[in-house]
Structures are given as C-alpha cells and as structure tokens.
Image (tube, rainbow, N blue to C red; front, side, top):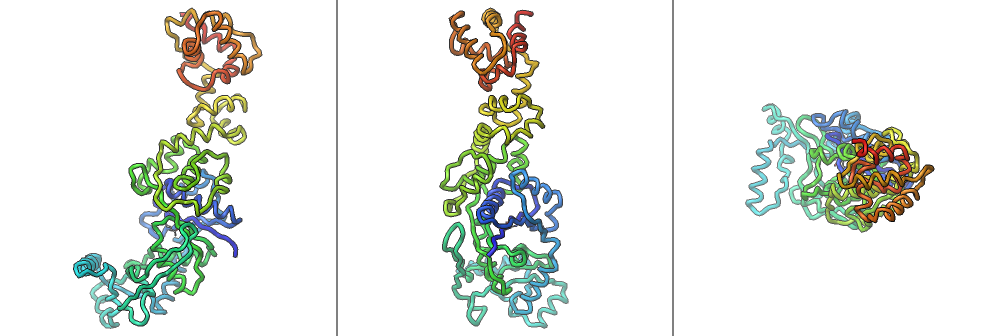
Amino acid sequence: MSVTLRFAPSPTGRLHPGNARTALFNWFFARRHNGGYILRFDDTDQARSTAEFATGIEEDLAWLGIHADRVERQSSRLALYADAAESLKAAGRLYPCYESAEELERQRKRRLARGLPPVYDRRALKLTQEERAALEAQGRRPHWRFLLPNFSADPFAPERTETSWDDVFRGAQSVDLASLSDPVLVREDGSFLYTLPSVVDDRDMGVSHVIRGDDHVTNTGVQLALFAALGAEAPAFGHHNLLQTEAGEGFSKRYEALSLAALRREGVEALALAAYASLVGTSEAVRPVTCLDELAMLFDPKKVNRAAARFSVGELKALSARTLAQLSYEAVAERLREAKVGGGEAFWLAVRGNIDKLADAALWWRVASGPVEPVVAEEDRDFLARAAELLPEEPWDENTWGEWTDTLKAQTGRRGKALFMPLRRALTGFSAGPELRALLPFVGRPNTMARLCAPCRD
Ligand code: GLU
C-alpha cells in the first residue's frame, strides 16, 4: 500500500508550534516511508477561513522546510460532501433534527438531573413525515445527525460498542460509540462540519495514515464508523500529545505572539523550532540538529509521551542559539549575503558560537568593518596607547590576538579582565561578544589602531 499523509489545518490563523508538531510528524512519517504529503485546507468554515491565512500557512511550512506534493481545499469539494451526505441519508444513516441550541441544552440538563449520560436521545428519529413537514412549515430548517452504529436492532437502546484501532502513537485504542451523541454532520444552513468532509477527502485522496493531535481521539471513533458507513477502507490513525503554552494552556491560533510567523520575526531559526516542536514531550533529548532529515531519522511515534508537553519560548530561543552555533557556512551563506555580512566562511565560524540570532552576525560584521564608537574609561587611556604601540604588523591570523595580549601582559602587568575588557570595549564598543581572537583579523590593523587611538585624539 502506498503511504500518503496529509496535514489539514483550517486557514483561520497562522500556524503555531502545536500545528508545527502535527505538520512535522506527518512530514517525518512521509519521509521515512517514501510517502506523499498533502496540504489540505479545511476551509468549510467560510466565515473564519481566509485566502491570506492559507498563503501564510504555506509560507510557514516552506520556512520549516516542508513542501507538500499537493494542495487541496475543502471549499472546492463541497459537491462531493453533498453526494456523501445524500448516500448516508438514502441509507438511513443521516437524519434530520430540528431542536434549537436552547432546546438541546434543556434536554441535556434534564438527562443529567435524571442521572443519565448527557447524550442526544435520538428523539428526532421518531418524527413522522408529517411532523417534519409541520416543523419545516414553521420555518425550521434541519441539521443532520449521523446515526452511530451503537445498537443491535433498536436505536433507542444503545449498547456498549467499542470501536478499536491500533494507534500509530498510542497502541491499542478504543472509543465506546454508546458514550457519544450522534454527531451533527450538516448544519442548519447546509454547511458541513469538519467530520464528514475529512473522511470523504481521506478516502478520495488515498490517505493511508492520519496523524493528528490527541484532541481528535473521540472523532476517530466517529470517523471509523463513517468510513464503514460509506463502504470505504479506513486509514491508520495516530494521535500525538499536544503542546501547551508556558501558562499551561492549549495553543490557539489566537495567540499571535506565539505564531511561527512571530517567532520567525524574532529571529528564531526554523530548524530550532522544528527540533523543539518535535522533540519536546518525547523520550528523545531536545537538541540542536543540522537538517530536517536528522529529525525525521529521530522520529519514532512510540517515543512520544502521552502527557501534554510544555513549550517554553525561552528554551526555544536558547536552542535556536545552539542551532546557529553548529550550522555550516553553506547552510547559511545565502542568508548572510542577504544580511550583507562579509568575511566569508571564516567570519561565520568566528561569530556563530556567540550569537542569539542570525541578524547578530550582521551586527558583528558592522563592528568588524566599522565605524565603531569605542568605549574607553579614563583610567585605561595609557594602557590603550601602549596597546597601540605594541600592535603587531599584518598579516594577522587567529594567533595574533594571543601574541599581542601576551606581550601586553608582560609589559603592563595587567591580566584577566583588566587586560581584556578595555580592549574589547575599545575595539567593539561592547562588553561582550564573539571571541576577539577570532574577530580581530576581520577588524584589521588600521581599524584596530584607529579605535585604540580614538581617546588619544580627544
Ligand atoms: N482541521 C482539523 C484540525 O485542524 C484537522 C484534523 C485532522 O487532521 O483530521 O484540527
């Protein structure tokens, strides 16, 4: 059987790290099995879905390094869902209901008060043709419920009916269909809820594995019954644990500041986001990687925890810095060029271990190439003048700094911080940064001289 995965976001906002986890797990599974990858926009909710969000989500995925073989939109497949709904109606599996939300709420409360489970009691199934016609004559429009196969002969006497599957992540799983209300598949206005379209799409698009968050476990019980009702073979299902914000809340597209787009703007590396979003909450250590395929190789659904995992922006940013520290020049060369960072590979190797984000490389390149506002304390002036006198002639390499500061130490008696800090502040204008041993050759003798001597000219 060929392997086909799909990632199915609704385009009602930009992707957040929790969505990225699902997108990545699907991607890793596809990569590991040479499978296809479909990006499917679940955009039947036309009031909340927008083309801009869909474009934004494609951008988010491209940034992560995920490239779908195919893009599908539910909004262009509505006629197919209507066909499926008609066939369910013809088979007596989709029935019209006329209760308002208030009526349903009253029924629910009454059942709870009588110690009964708050599931829909199928009273609309009892309506005669005439009663339906009378309700419609009053202007009521039906919503449509799927008759769950949880009874032998009498739908009003549901029996425990375990629907089971071997979950890709969680192993043996089952949902008792008698514990659920018949799900509404079609709203009063004729629009579809996500449940049926998803099944129709998975069937038509040859999806072999549905990998999604564990908030969908119950849906899977219903959807397995729908596959059977449509006479279709069901795919395998896998449910992974969800990510939570630091406040312990579920991620939501409403948290703009935690969107991939916002994190990216803050300078978070895509690889770090991918590593963190896919390794946190698993038995693998969260660690920096050099490419997405490395994460695909680490992916093992059986190593994913059951409990929700906390996603800390602070840990993500720290991982992002560690990710940069081991990225090769080839991996970042184009972005460095765009950021106008010179110095080639040598400069990248000199600074990568000391930056929080790639944009900082541009800062240190500006520091190396100048101009710089040296920071000089009054008491260091003579020391810096001496440093200028002892500055070696070029050519310089990474040993120059050591030779120069050894001589300075011997000549001035200064050591440690008293030796290095005035030099760092004069040469860079900052108290911290990349190792000067590495940076010095890029500053060059004329710039170094000018910075050391700036105070002499005051
Ligand atoms: N649009 C659904 C969601 O974002 C897709 C669930 C699924 O993968 O089936 O939750």
